[in-house]
Length: 438
Image 1 (spheres, rainbow, N blue to C red):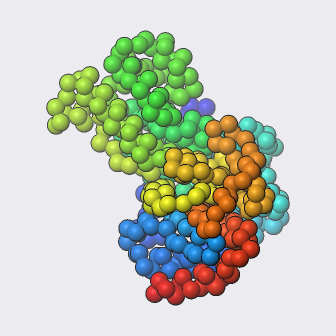
Image 2: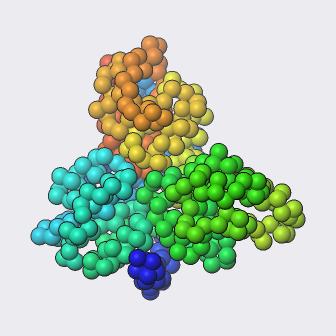
Image 3: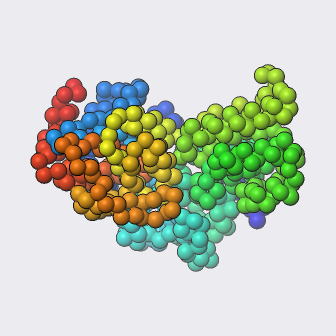
């Protein structure tokens, strides 16, 4: 298997300079299925784009419906990688009506998109946790297997390559994920160990880990607390055996904490909180500097000068969420898939400031008295009573993750407004808002 993986990485990552050809500056536009679109939300986004082309204004858009005021985040919804993946998947389905079509796992972490793909006859090879749903030996070289936006591991690439399935034609890996792989490769080529800040069970983190470990020793840390525990091994205060037990399943084969933690560099899962990654970077750097007694000009001898590897949409959405929660409001609604990492982080940010409810669709707004909210900590839906305060004017913050369709946000907005019988017409308010921005 190691030989297969080695051959695959040479063909996949470096053949024809594939990962270097992505143009991050000139973003293309995509054709997204109409069921995910919203003319209303598209108009709001376009007005904001035209008035803030440099994306420096993170204040929300404010819509006053009378008895309720809804503050819509400056940035939210489908990102470049998601739009690319969705468009590609639907085009593949349209162009290949006679073929069996599979997805390695969920296309993106959004239930509406994945449910529609299943309805169209697409089958998932694995679930989001990596459990096998379709046996590899049932696939043939005539089948189409779509690689999702998160990318996949080199082990899976080797399996597909052996079957004879084209690794290139149906790959929707986000270019910003590939950017992280390239960065990890650069760090590894310079003899640093790669530390990946991410969720160990997340598809993207597993893919990044897989690509990195064939180049250099690689380790996953899931949060600052785990980074602090890693520092004991950097300072050589705990044994290798303790390391193997504490970080089981999160380090590459042959990892030697005594040797491989002397020179490190940090990359991250693209959907992590920027502030969390920065804290981990600064903490580990400080530990390295202290342990090796380094002068400023000596730091790179033990700690790689890494650049932030968050994607632009994650940065924009998080910055816009900070702008959103800076406003006074009664509660927040955050929409998205419950297994969406970037959405979960937006929920965490909002919950630090005010009552916040995580829902995947307007259906979770049961009535003006009840909401079915997803508890991020306990990973279960909870029925909340009396989520709308009884007052003359209610202010609501509204946003969603990078894999949430605009259509979902429009449905939520309209349903929220409908809970206030004396409210103004949604289309009229948005129309007047749009005119006022010009």
